[in-house]
Amino acid sequence: MMIDGSTLTALWGAVILSGVYHGVNPGMGWPLAVSAGLMDGRHRAMLKAIGALAFGHLLAMLAILLPFSMMTALIHWETELRVGAGALVIAAGVYLLINRRHPRFLARVAPSRLVLWSFLAAMAHGAGLMLVPIYLGICSADLADAGHEAARDLMGQNIASAFFVAFAHTLAMTVAGGVIAAAIYFYFGLKFLSRTWFNLDLVWAFSLILVGCFGVYLALYGH
Image 1: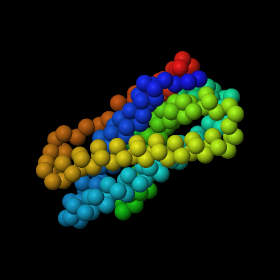
Image 2: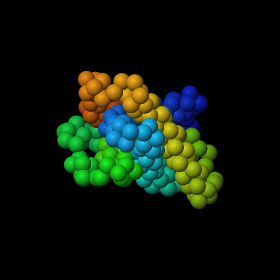
Image 3: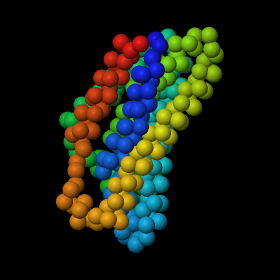
């Protein structure tokens, strides 16, 4: 199944936009970066916190994408894998709609362990799962012409793609979250944050369902 250039461009756009979306979402940790800067009294502490959050988010993306990158070597099961991945993302969205409580274990992670917190937050919110249908759609552009390639070569190529997708997504997430954190730290202050706090939990759940449906549609009817 070949994917045309416009669809492939749209998929890469979705990688970037989902990163921006994750970065804007307070649940991915930018308020912790603001807090770190204010508590330490230095903007370097905020930058360090943003870096730690980004690294944890990147690890979470790779923890989800790398297993799927190995499965893409099963060329004959491409459609089934992509439909199954879409269904998994839809199920995660439905679960978050039903269970609206935040994971309690995140509150038990010490504030100094931002990498671990970011990793666990991304996993708990299904952030990595959101990328799976998009990533598999990108990989399918190569799968159609891979029938005579060695499975090992194909797997290596898709593992590299997984790293690139995760990095591009995390970079967009870091820039978006960092801009908001810097704006509040340098200009608006905590009072502005308390007046304008926004909760994206419901939007997040619906976005997972939407991405899952998009992945299933693309697997069955994409060309």
